[in-house]
Length: 332
Image (cartoon, rainbow, N blue to C red; front, side, top):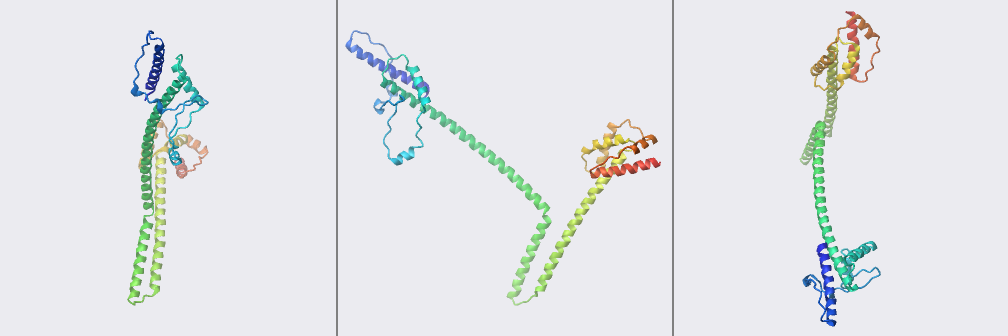
């Protein structure tokens, strides 16, 4: 029942009571004209015997509940609303005064109307609360499912990546471990088979196999170390090639221009020395297009400048090659 319907019902009850009082007056004065009043829909009015109204200290009407044993009271305790606060009762009283203000009504009728109004208001409140709760539960469930699915997908991707990287880094160890397990299992079963057929094999033979496995492990470690050394050598070779490419690109530039080009080239990305030299050429062409060749005075000026301290390995190579190039140019 909506709030508007509750108000209309309360007004109809009020008008019905007024009509009854007018009828009582007409008994004493039959010639007095009866006040016209709209009819009341009795189907929408509940039986007044269902309610027993009592006046509390706060003036609120209470409805007697059917008796119930202790078990039923315990089960229904969660579903019973708490008693309204004093502020709520005061607000309700103000609304009822505004609704029936100026009307000469009995206190019993006002209490009945208040009970009906509170019931309708409570019903509407619970309906709205139920709709909001259902909507909230649906949104919460959907959002929880979305977050859970998202986390599960990210976790799967991360675990796949970690497993893949670990398998790649430990491929040799995994293969070696599997081979050792197979070999140990085979030898153990073979020894059991020989003992079952009274064939004696000296323990020294099994010790020799263990020693051979240990030597294999040592050789594999040395091989891994040599592979790492080769990787470092290739890396250093690439760095040296890039340094030589930088020296070729800076030929004919002053020391200041060389330092400027070095700073500009720090953020370059390349796969090999050829790409690095090509990009250096592009930078040189755009920034130092009007540069002149070295002369004797410029060489003397460069020799008097303080040498730049480079903290990176590339910088150290470049510094060394710069000094060698300057010495060669001076000798010429």
